[in-house]
Image (cartoon, rainbow, N blue to C red; front, side, top):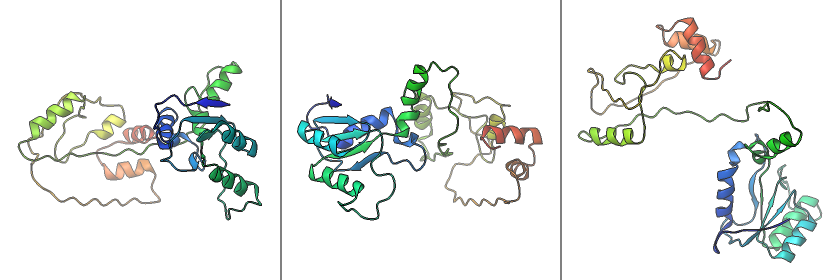
Amino acid sequence: MRTPFLRPMGAKVKDILAVLDGAWPLAWAVPEDRVGLQVGDPEAEVREVLVALEVSAAVIAEARNLAVQLVLTHHPLLYQPLSALREDQPGGKLVAEILRAGLALASWHTNLDLAPGGLNDYLAQGLELQEVEVLGVVRRDPWLKLTVFVPVGYEDPVRTALMDDRIGVIGNNGKGKTTLLKVLAGALQPQQGQIKRHPNAVIGFFEQTTTVCFDPLRTVEEEILYSHPDVDLQMARSVAGAMLFE
């Protein structure tokens, strides 16, 4: 299937892939899948794209005849690592033909399958399935806690900027206090647009060293109870559940 690319002249392979990644992120692919650009130059200019289920000698020949610059497939060509690039072997021969033709090859595979409105949803709709849901977690994004330090005298402008961007605080912020466990357990709701500094908080420069020592024989609940003696068992279980620990 030949698909004209409708962006202005001068679009590059990397530009097109960035648009695709915005709609169907590569990060949504299952582990060990081979998605994205597989062969070619990300800086190469593209005027037209050829879309195919998978690459073959016939697809490469069609791409040559149509003078396209990018072949976009669903199934990746390179899935297992190649120990050699030999033209007397099927995979090596296709890669060599792609390079000789000056083509770029990219694949959008399981990330397209799993995406909302993707192939899985399309098939489920065609089969008239009801109550469709994901059967297993593909990935979890890591979460980071950010602490901001600003020069003395810039506190108010920074607070204003944060509030303009709808940033809130959880409970009473300040030195040596945390209400995160209560929030995770569902016992406390975050407060939006309230900036407070605890009376005991000190403004200045402080070196910080973090040491984390987990006992491999303890469960997550036991670690929470050990690190936070003021937390009861029920809250520890709620926190572990909120953090997706079983």
